[in-house]
Image (tube, rainbow, N blue to C red; front, side):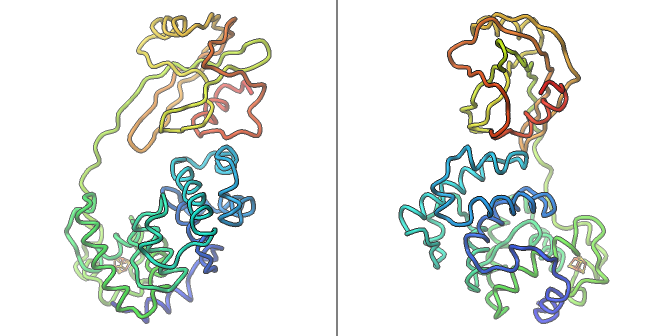
Length: 337
Ligand code: SF4
């Protein structure tokens, strides 16, 4: 590995990112959680808002999950923030609010897996633990022309062991992790990698053999499950009828009335069986939302209900509450609020 060229390149070209300028393990933890599934440009304003509101482990631990979800409302993949909050509560209650300095202790914290522990150990404490994310997988698989299928856990684990050897040899775990992440994000991109500007171009086998686009090897994803929903935006007097989700997906978010059905008639019968007494006024363009493993197709209707079943709530407006991206889309499509 061309460590010196890599580190020189990093110090000259790194982006000006707030979480790359700190050794505070809590801030690095928050940033790594936010960067999972979210591009830097998108996560930055959320990150700034989050650390302003929750600047310490203690402030996050003492908050409510609703407060946390309100701050990150719109970013998506909310389970990670539940885990972050759970992790902060664990650190606050069991470790005096101080993140531990050993890998094994970090791994005991709810929500901190191998990748996040490696990122905290190497970036915050300059210790040689690997953080092998998608960017790093792409760079290493190209530099060494590794033909393993990285959709499979066993191959990711094998590469993590190799990455550990590389970071140990680097003599600079902090710079190694950051520069590999930055190289994958800005130069060795999925399409059109800028090999001319790359500090590893003299050793990169994929560049030498012009096979860059063959790496990383990833077998096709399983197709996503598709669900048809009828969504009813119903008013009761001057309020909207909503339900607080208890399912794992979007847990804790309020939503309009979602009925899984293949026909409007079927959906209306289910509404009646739930205890609603409905008059429908209008229907709107269909809305689609894609999750990691699911696709929701939503047919949207508005109207009133003369009854509100016990398991539903009524709210006057949607300000100061966490809103999922799905709800945001529904509200924008209907212009009802
Ligand atoms: S030389 Fe090209 S393919 Fe190889 S690591 Fe650099 S950017 Fe990626």
